[in-house]
Length: 330
Image 1 (tube, helix red, strand yellow):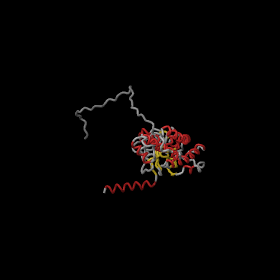
Image 2 (cartoon, helix red, strand yellow):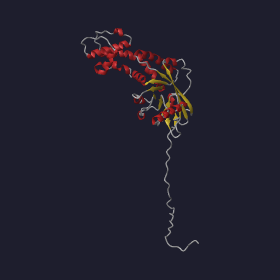
Image 3 (cartoon, rainbow, N blue to C red):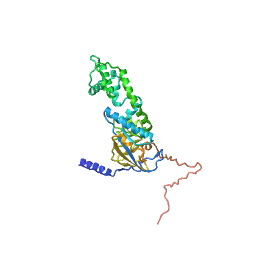
């Protein structure tokens, strides 16, 4: 019976949230000041969510289109709210440091330092011939070189009888660094336009960037998240985290005093599809402005203890002795 009652309660809560409005109690609303002096009122945060492909070739095609979009944003001084996976953010940062993408690190690592798990992973992806009796390190070094040659669309240049060196591998990687460096340069000026999509395994690391997070939840890691704004993918009731603004996709929240914020997420497969309407992009709420705020703490009221003047004469207490009296009432 109790179980049925609980199910009914949950269904009721879900029906109630169909109104798509999350309202904080008056005593729970936080008071903030936005750096751009944002007028009080109702706002909708429109965000475009970009898909990041899985295969290296698809990712290269994505980067070409993504680079066009970022270049246009910088050239026209336009801000667009964009959700990207945290892995894509890491890859762009790695490029800026002349490092490879996260998924490529196993092919970049010195062959002599590969773990057994990493060797098994390479074996599952690459099946080629290599010099007989070359030794285990040479086998995997040749496989790494083949990966980079194939990436550069020069797989036919691989010679199975060659004893490739780490230097050969680095020369190939340097070519790739040169091809990618422009992506990192165009990313830096508009970094605050990006929102990082995270999960329970990377929310702490992503939270250290200070960029807005897009997530299913905070997974009880609020204390280690530096991001001032968190956007929840789903929520059925108000979420309040001290000193942070928490929004929910598809709902209106009022956890900031005198403001109502809605969130609308639009999935985009091709980044260049946003270029056509870039100049006509309406002036709306931008995440870089929303995250630039400071909390206004209520002033502490100090109650002073009442004092008695020194020259004030203390009152005498009237003492009535317990004696018989002749007064009576007839």
